[in-house]
Image 1 (spheres, rainbow, N blue to C red):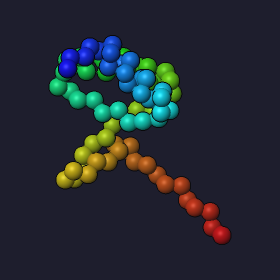
Image 2: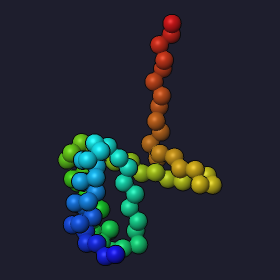
Image 3: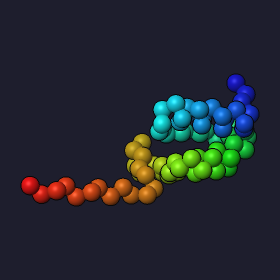
Image 4: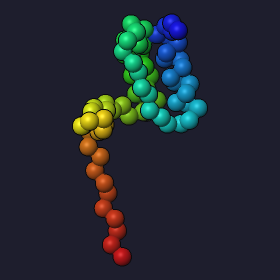
Length: 76
């Protein structure tokens, strides 16, 4: 299936809008994905989405590149 950059952007934004949140996984095997990425990132930032990179931590376990700091629970 060949899909162009504009279609990738349109599909990704429509799916995120439908759910109101989400995770996008983009494969870099197609040139159209590379062309879509800067456009998609700009549009996501315009809409207030936070973009993070997920990197492998160890043996199939992924971790956010930016650590998530838990909030303290109130003491009873």
